[in-house]
Length: 151
Image (cartoon, rainbow, N blue to C red; front, side):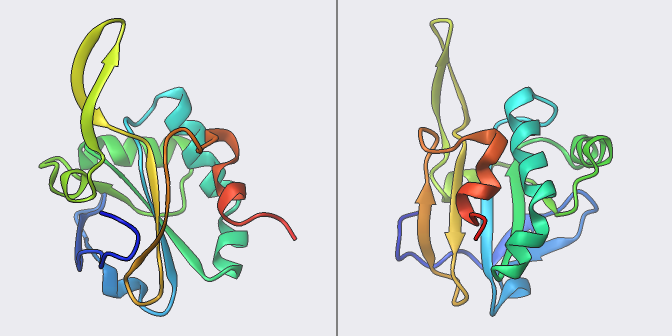
């Protein structure tokens, strides 16, 4: 997925099994953020940044949806533990991470494996990707503030 591309209509199912569609957010921008794993320190910091600044994002005309390949049950635990106030898509079949190009080879301690590369897509009111924030740019503890800075 690149800047200028149309995002897919069906994004996936959230932690409650509800289908999340792009048209659910028509007329608003969508912050679709992909993260590697629930309950890890960086992913928790990022999710809590979105939770804590949700009002600011809403005022800026933006809704937030998180995506990882964790199960809906894992997402429910993650949301409950951290009091998250936005949906998390359980992309267990890896359809969305592959569509957006964030399922890539990674390396840790010399071991190569496939995983989600932390990336945020800002999708405009017409469903077009207007900005991509890559892993080197994302500061997990203040990521929401990077997207919607204080006036």
